[in-house]
Length: 568
Image (cartoon, rainbow, N blue to C red; front, side):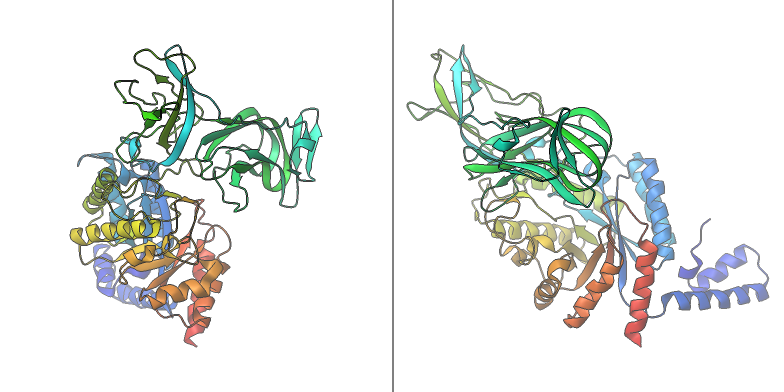
């Protein structure tokens, strides 16, 4: 049985040694040694020390991995483990393997005196929780797309027609990095110093239309980040955020991404490599095309509207045309909730329609951000019901523990009509959602601590106008957060302003650092708070997005030195 000696009380150690039948004199000597060791490891420790873990505890291998992280973190003096577990988003029964696995994790955490804090309400990354009801994804509007009837079927007609120049015609592209060269095999991107190797073309589009970009890529010992993206001209707002998952060495394969033009009449299409440090990347056959009813969402907040262009008359679904669905949308064999490479559905008309009749069609579609990220429709009552169920599952398997709100980088929000008749302003809508979440947690257990990430309520980070694909201004989102909520602040770029903002609102704060960079970043974070004389900083957090715990020991050592120095 594992026993973390440095974290046991004297009475616990006595009982343990008696069970092992230690002689009394040996037991006394060992107790003295343990007290000395404990004193040395904890001198000057004042801050809570957190470590983040993302997992899926439905699987036994994940249980072993999380247990190992618990043991390592506790031995280094960490006090809390933030557990972002995908398993909470899937229904289970009381006898399921998931329930047994969570029991093992609780037992390990208790043994090592590490506090577990589950993450709940994954509205910003809702792909797991929406598996059974994909229509509850947050939608972005398509407006007045052109469909033309032929032989009783209405099909999309690009309006206007869109295209990209051939990659061999570099003179027709608006910008070409000097590291891009035309070869017999294709357009070659090279680089060794972390620079970019890209091409750019400005394309005329229609506002609020759904477009797909496609390109063929081959790699040889490629080191860098391959990308295919669209940006608004002028604002440089990124309309697609899906880095391509390209292996370092791979034969020719087609890659794609989609974007909504929003209110743009021109977009900038960029393809190539970012931060390239070696190898080569070849490109062929870049294509842009307008999408039809790809992954169309069907629920009251995301209506479909079909209008006869000549008469402006709205047609009736089920009477003048068949129900509109995307039959290829909900395949369960994908690793993502929505696929973007299948063909779009047509509209089957009912009754007689002359060939060439033009229709204008409007609908909503989801957006895939960073390949897997799908946002839920936060203020839809049906989506809130799923979030409620997830929070209650957390209550069942992790009772009497604090909670962390999942919300961070909410990239699609505010386009749908409010179902309750409330404000359309994005900031006020998000504030209402946060009140709903914290009120529900209070009803389940009013004595727990609630924490949340800072970025979506931080006016110096993401609580601004036109953040990502959010409709409107997120200013005021912070009004939905009670001062008793602890803020996990991740705005190192504007440290003084952000820390002061939340401190002035009465929040305690935990500083989130590392992010797969250098553990020394956390010391700079702490020094920034110290220099600004920020009150209420109660902890620090080791955050990794790549499951990289190689810096955990150094992170702890640096904190030991910092806290010892602060006491002198």
